[in-house]
Image (cartoon, rainbow, N blue to C red; front, top):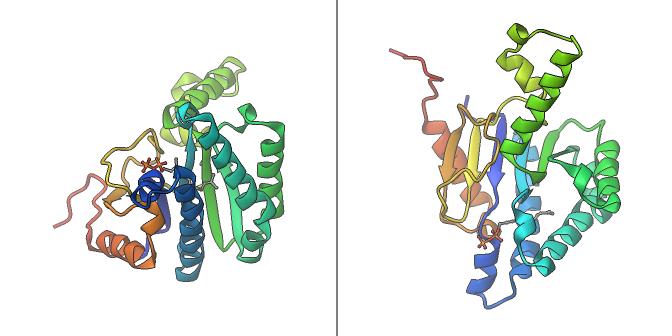
Length: 234
Ligand code: FPP
């Protein structure tokens, strides 16, 4: 298998990209959206089926209010005003994360983005928004416990497949390749359950600078790896 089926990306380094240019941080986020669009188009072109991106974590609310507001505006623009571009490109949007605690206007934008792209199947784009891996697992545990109490199944019947069904990514294959830009070497609460056997690719390149050439390097690195899933191959 040379091309990964599912690629996930931690898009880090927007702030530093702007700082390098003595620009306010939000310029970096704006450029980050352009980078995202470039990668979305390319994934569709080369036949990657699923792309999951970390757009806003449950911890990102702690940023300065102005920056949070700007990120929300960008989200509204990209998945509201400019949605047609995704519709035309055959992209099926799904938000993964807790959107019940964001503004009604934003909930509406996500719902309508999902609704308007639901018949597309060229590229599945999962946007992790107000997402945290531990939170996702916690809400899965709540769901399972509640269904056990209701007698839908017994404790013995809780398998990994059952747990999968309670995650935001329920019907999607796990990521084959996870890319983190911006030089940090950590998972930051991203897809904790789903990444059990994912290959990681870390690069110093800041997200706004992550172009097709950089993406090809990550795909090339993935190609070289031997995925054993805990087994031994002679
Ligand atoms: C990390 O850069 C990036 C984010 C917290 C947000 C990622 C968002 C985008 C790429 C824009 C697309 C998102 C939406 C919602 C449309 P950073 O600010 O942590 O950079 P730094 O580590 O250099 O400070």
